[in-house]
Length: 580
Ligand code: ADP
Ligand code: TPW
Ligand code: MG
Image 1 (cartoon, rainbow, N blue to C red):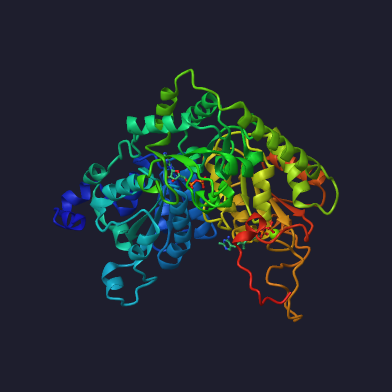
Image 2 (cartoon, rainbow, N blue to C red):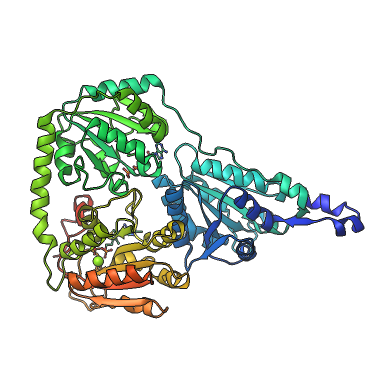
């Protein structure tokens, strides 16, 4: 269509007319919608897109693997509420990015995977084009929406639709398929500019029905042992002041899911984090705010929740289909969290009764008991470090520097850090999310540094780090203030397993002993350090954070200290036939 318009123009007139092309229109469409950063890997057919975007003043961050670029885009979406963009080449690059797109969708993070693709005529006849693959069909079941643009004049609409699909309602991943031929299509520049669309109010407020708000307040008022659970949807919503006001006005103990930590500080008197099992088991009314009753909350039933005794749930979520997904929801409140929480607050008025004193006292007693039990384990200063003593050192650092962003993955390294390191501000803890996926660390750390300008501390299991470790080159190349601490316990969960056959191969969970991950970053001009005690660890991390230099600290952890699958060993099926 656009090509035809150009071809029919008079040659002289054509020479005078200003032209644009598919590359430029994609860039203009993104910029018009306030998107100024692209995470990706170059190659045919998107190399010029990256170049031209950079020339147009966009930040284009090139990675070593698309999965890490995709993870960066996903967490940029979580942090900013604007979809993060991941740009890849066709088939293999697309597939590498697709894992991140699926993970973003699972976690309700808005992102757009833009992949170049081969020519439709050849792909559809399966004639073996360069990097041939029916990418749109493959992406569809793994994301919220998938679109393909065939004409340059439709790029504006395509980008606007992708943005709306990513951020409206429950956020998620969107795939945008751009065939190679599209990029070089030319059209009149003025017509091109007119074809662009700025998405107005792409994530409109969704106001809850007054009757739903009243029902929720009635259920909450009837509670003897109420609990509020904050999930990462609450962190995403950026309704921080309203959420804090709701929690404090109600006086109800709150439990943050891992990426909701810091919405209110973990040291807040109403935090029930240190009494998690007690509040889940003994509460009678539970209000979920942006948290799903999935495996991370034992599906809202069973022993964890004190079954056979059943409780009443109030659930605030933008996705109506989430209600009753695992157990009956007595009071569904469907809407965006900002609007819902404001409506609840208004309904509570100024004379909302405090929860019964016995309940608060019971929660506080359990909290104090657990905190006292943990304290001495965090203060040991001996070598080799175990998880508790190493995390005790990092806990102090985060307390002294509440603005740093903590990225965290691994098994023991994840589960124990989640409990031990207090977070003081919203969206300062980024981790493996709903799937418990390994390899998000470097992508998240890079995007967190780029999007917020704040220093990042990435606490990584040695296995987790291995999934994305090459991106330390990216961290060095862009000189990002990222300090990576690798908890090196020689393997997955532990470094002490042995090959049951007695053969020459090491056990399946074990890595090279005494590995020096710090040497990796030195290869790229970053700062490496090897530490064996909590004091050394503290010193090295403080130095890194003070200098802002890319740093990787190899923290030697007792290879025997970890447990299988960290805190979720109960989900791990084990063969009765296994040889010890
Ligand atoms: P967690 O893992 O922290 O428990 P989940 O990812 O399970 O959190 O749940 C997040 C929930 O938040 C999802 O059900 C999603 O629909 C919801 N959500 C995300 N953003 C908003 C928003 N702005 N308003 C309301 N609900 C939201
Ligand atoms: C994409 C399975 C869960 S945890 C883990 C693996 C491989 C590594 C644990 O070892 P690590 O931590 O990081 O050294 P630690 O402290 O306990 O020693 N592939 C993907 N995701 C997951 N979750 C796995 C495999 C897994
Ligand atoms: Mg390990």
